[in-house]
Image (cartoon, rainbow, N blue to C red):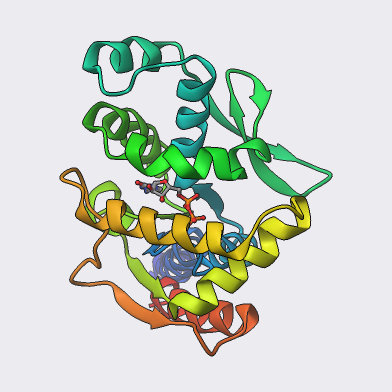
Amino acid sequence: MCFVLSLMNVVLFNTTLLRQLLYFCEYMAKKIIIAIDGWSSCGKSTLAKELAKELGYLYVDSGAMYRAITLYFLRNHVDWTEKNEVKKALKEISLEFIHNDKSEQSEMHLNGENVEYVIRDLVVAEKVSDVAAIKEVRKFAVEQQQLMGKKKGVVMDGRDIGTVVFPKAELKIFLTADNAVRVERRFKELFEKNPNVTIEEIKANLEMRDYIDSNREESPLRKADDAILLDNTNLTAKETIQKVLKLAKRIITD
Ligand code: CDP
């Protein structure tokens, strides 16, 4: 009798321990999807990159994919008003994010070539919104984005992440900032690489892209109903990150 009781005690103790261990593992392994959408140049990628670093998540810059597709179309003189040409060209495109140990960033590769820097050029920015409005192009990019988020633990930024790519994302942020501040931020960023760039050009490009992105038929830019609106006009990058990190940690430990 005594032996049976002590055996039961051992079993119960180990079961409780096992349960606690399982709970701990589940907590440690709980991964979410963070979707960050918003207008051009309001700091989405800075925020997304830092969040991913803090949480040990994968960062996906969905805009880089549309930029790389646009670069391919421009280089290969693809007439993107022709559906069949677009379809044919997309079959020739392979996109890959590869981590660069030097820059400590994941960089966009188009058919094996690192295009991370060239896709930021104004020549690409001038056309990317037209290309990103094409149904076939979006299907091509969204399928790959959804695959990247299959295991969760992803921070993705773009225009339709919370509405189309991951409508069930656990945390959705819609980032915004005053127009003048956005133009100033993008100007500083591009001027470092190309001192010939003018503030007027940048302003015109942002206005044009915002207009096309929010008025297109396919997945227009809009705030998902359950997204949190965050205006970072008067916030530093660090303050923006801290705010969102707090929200993310609350969901992860819930
Ligand atoms: O850095 P910025 O916010 O200016 O642009 P980006 O994220 O590099 O995106 C470039 C362009 O790609 C946008 O202006 C959109 O036309 C398109 N895009 C999109 O349609 N959907 C996304 N999820 C991401 C970008």
